[in-house]
Length: 282
Image (cartoon, rainbow, N blue to C red; front, side, top):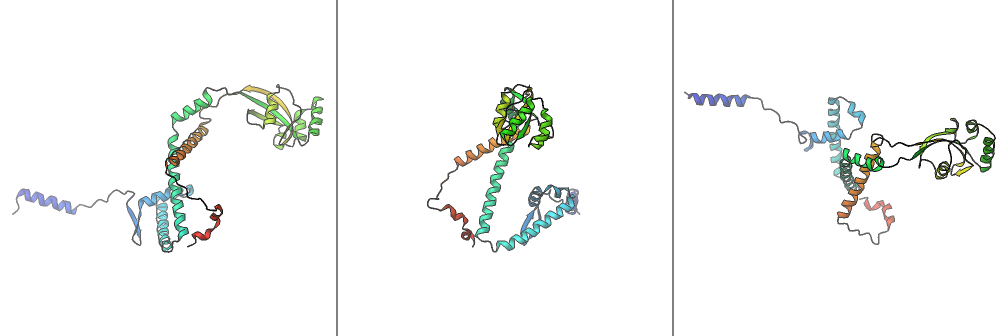
């Protein structure tokens, strides 16, 4: 007969052996299928889901799960068939794709880390906070093909003709003609230089002599001017973030390329040889 302590030990062992075994928490390494002995993991499925177009992500979870798994299984079977006959072209394309993906990953991480609230604020202050926003101009124009036409219209305007009426009738810029030649408000740098130069020299309420640009001959009416106001940080946030990312990416490319040991051995190679696809056809 077992002693009390031995009986308690036997009961505990019995309970342990009869308890259900809990499955491990799924992870990226969890195998969800095999194809000819090659593992397909949950991580593979998650990575594929991230690359899907937005419309597929609207599917319910079960449909998407099964669809992704089936796609990877099919791809694995097809890839295995292709691997047996892989040639030089296939290997080179895979090398290039891997290199491109990894390079893109570095640049994406660089661009993402470049954008912080502090960096955006600093760039905004540099570009807008301590600078004079300048002047904005409100003008209208009549655009015609020749100088003679422009001079004839200028004579009509000097004689009292209505600028907006003539713009509607005769301006070849049909986009503004319907609004009587009105171009709205614009700042320095937004118009072609001959047009801008003429506007900057005008007084509000006057009409210019004919002005030639690449578009033709303009008669410009300067309606009014006003002091420009600096945009808010939210108005230009996308612009600032893009500039920060662009600068960071450019710096990272320069940094890593200059730090790399690069040796070019292209002396004597005709650049036209890149057209010779027969070199990778085996």
